[in-house]
Image (cartoon, rainbow, N blue to C red; front, top):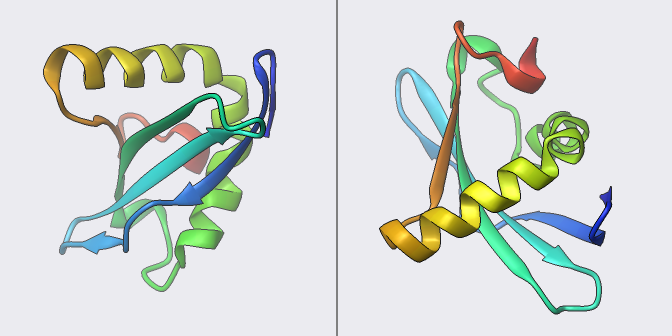
Length: 101
């Protein structure tokens, strides 16, 4: 993923967590030179995706959105880790479809 801060790789950091109404994908974003690594969680309503979508397929759909929203998402993720001591969680559902529009 090409950003104003450099090239970042996107990878699934944990196995998908599935419930009846959502899938949670934990992502790791790492700058190509290794100087920065950020993690965040995405809660995606099952109504927005195929139930058999793999982490790789979800990342393919999320990557263009994440590239557009990178700076804001990165800052929020870093702030959440520093101040709340937990990963930022972004929810996508019928009201906020994000990359699943």
